[in-house]
Amino acid sequence: MKNVVLTESKNGAQILLDSLEKAGVDSLFGYPGGAVIPLYDALYESSINHILVRHEQAASHAAEGYAKATGKPGVVLVTSGPGATNTVTGIADAFCDSVPLVVISGQVGSAAIGSDAFQELDILSITSSITKMSYQVRTVSELPLIVEEAFKVAVSGRPGPVLIDLPKSVMLAKNDENNHANTFFHQIDNAKPVVDTVKVRQLVAALSKARQPLIIAGAGVLKSNAQELLRTLMHRYHIPVVSTLLGLGAVDSDDQLFLGMVGMHGSVAANTAIDQADFILNIGSRFDDRVVTNVDDFGKNAIIAHVDIDATELEKVMSTTYAIHASADDALNAILSELKNRTMTDTSAWQNLNQHAKGESTFHYHKLKTAIMPQEVIQAVGEVTEGNAIVVTDVGQHQMWAAQFYPFKHNYQMITSGGLGTMGYGLPAAIGAKFARREKEVVLFVGDGGFQMTSEELAILNDNNLNIKIVMFNNHSLGMVRQWQTLFFDGRLSNTVFKSQPRFDQLAQAYDINYARIDNPNSMFEELQEAFDSDKSILIEVIIPDDVKVLPMVNAGAAYRDMITEEEA
Image (tube, rainbow, N blue to C red; front, side, top):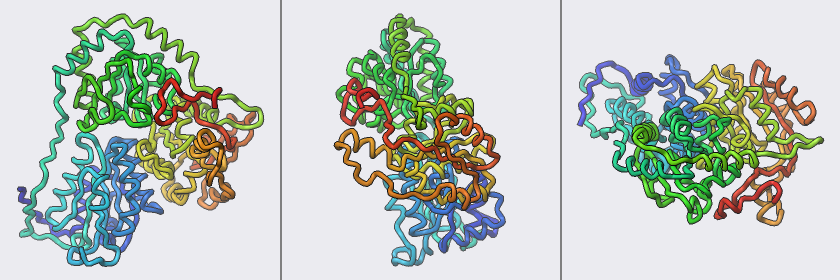
């Protein structure tokens, strides 16, 4: 039990903002409504920057972009009822990708809860399976404690979203010297799990004997800022590394020991290495089905070790010989310390095998004389930005092309929707990332389908003097679904081709941002460079063929050795 005495005569809305400032919040993404008018009135004189989105789903995605670009919780503020339900997709997306969010939803007054009042909804029940914790505030006095705890929960252990449901009556109520909070609060343990040194010793003993070891780098490496430790391990002991989609940036894509992204659209070299390895160390990835396309066949020749901060992910998908509950940084430190006492088996033959495979099977495509290939555009953007941009993607073919062809180097560089695969994520996430890192070049790769889901958020760009480069690939269709229909459903293109589209140049003009259309392969690079010199946000519409596929591809349920290559498609 905690007893808290609040002495200043402020109402709940003002106390909430004070609590957010104490938590280090500088930006809020939100949309007002009846239940949160008192809070928006308090914001009128607040130092916190409120970003007015055009739809509440965009608020949650923008907060995700902010969180992924900084590692700090993104904060969302919406009204009750539909305002709250519109955030659900973003909350679910954050839950799947372990993104720390604090979502504050307005609620009807306490006396009206349960009466089916106007815009009343039980948002706690709706989001119970996609939040780490949820709160409904009952008194002004408990509000600071709830906010403090919510931020601790969002970042502790495996990060994720937390919801605070705030009745309007609590926002309006004032505290006084006799207003006490006698409420039980969870004692949040911010301490990371203790590394089991016995298991680490056993893991290292097996690793040191491996002739064909391999490391899978997942998002957990980046979330614990363990990329330098990983690079030390791979270089000191000459262990090749593959990456998941969300692990891109943990290793420089130009590193000789990096074999590329692994999984459904992974490189031939990375997937082949999984097939041939005799020891696989997975650090910070949950063995999701886009990586483990066939559980029985995955790493069938390997001893498998798994390090994860979430104990529930261990042994959930893959049976492992060594399952270690730990953060990536602590585990890597322990492994490196133990390896000092070991002599590694000679792996030179394995290194040569992988280098040959990498040289023979890098991601490639056939250039056309009459049309622009999306892969060459992404490579060109990589050159123009020198591989240092924050890259945001929507979901679809362009997402995989960006993962395959952009030269990622750093943490907080790849911002995308992984586990939920949310179309419409890209534009608001790019906005959130730019608010977080104004000094960085932010590039958004998006398809014509996903772009139209949240294009209303273009209004935010000029409102806030943001300069984001939006590269929209237009193939007049839902490309990824079309690809599946072509390959696996006899080419029956059911509702994946757009019969009509907006005039994107006029849409850009309507929102007063710059526009460029690129459709000539002979002048593509120069036109792209010119577009990137734009001193304000620009929509760059790139016309690509409608039948370009993302390859290689491993069908769901198939083994890696059955991957479809460009020659077979």
